[in-house]
Image (cartoon, rainbow, N blue to C red; front, side, top):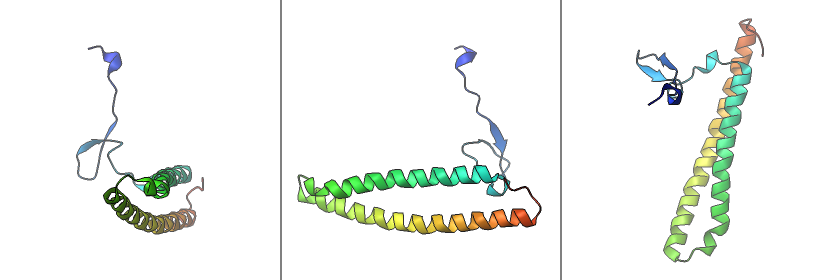
Length: 114
């Protein structure tokens, strides 16, 4: 096999001293710039919105189900999903609050505001 088809995966040492690819290792948000924090929040919002679109389409189409058993299962799953989305929204609001507080602490610490 030729070397031009090999993808180099960057590794870093995490807190447990175990090498892991960057996409697996958790990111320390205190080390992120404001632009990186905003980008992270945008990606979270997009993922939430994509999940909501699937939920909403299913909710609107569940009456078209061919069997009553499937309809009941769809209703139960939709109820579980909406509860999770509400919980996610609350968590997202907390996350935004914490990130804004982090930005304030950066200003107090004399760090640059990006």
